[in-house]
Length: 171
Image (cartoon, rainbow, N blue to C red):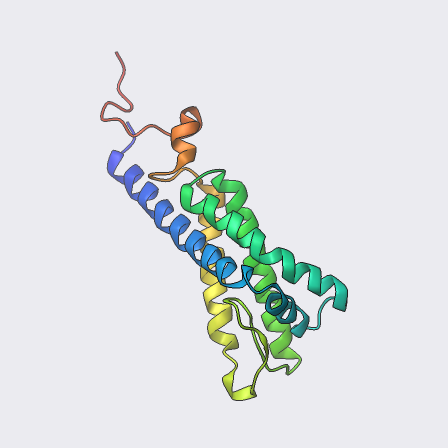
């Protein structure tokens, strides 16, 4: 008989991971969506992509972040959106690490600003640590996407373990 308390603990852990990742990605996108030129400038500051491509990525990124964030907060298609969110975080870690290694002094642009800043204002270790923590949330959700209070559980009940009081009993 499965232990209901440990199942609930795992579900709540998933809920917290889903909300942390979802809210951070949603807020990041929402802060950038009204300022596409700033978002494009932020992506260009990394000097990793051709100028025009970086601009297109900067314009599209806030919309993608909002979509992924909303779906994670709602708990809908959680595994897919967690994987997308984790890949975004991994790309950000690579970009930030690359900028740091090349001696660039830029704001990561994660929450709307971005661009060149004074070397003393960079926060690369904190930004990388934050994104690594979000990757952990994404990995948890990729492995165990069914969480408490998610639409996945309501819309696709057969795919998630049941949390009824009589779970595991036989007639």
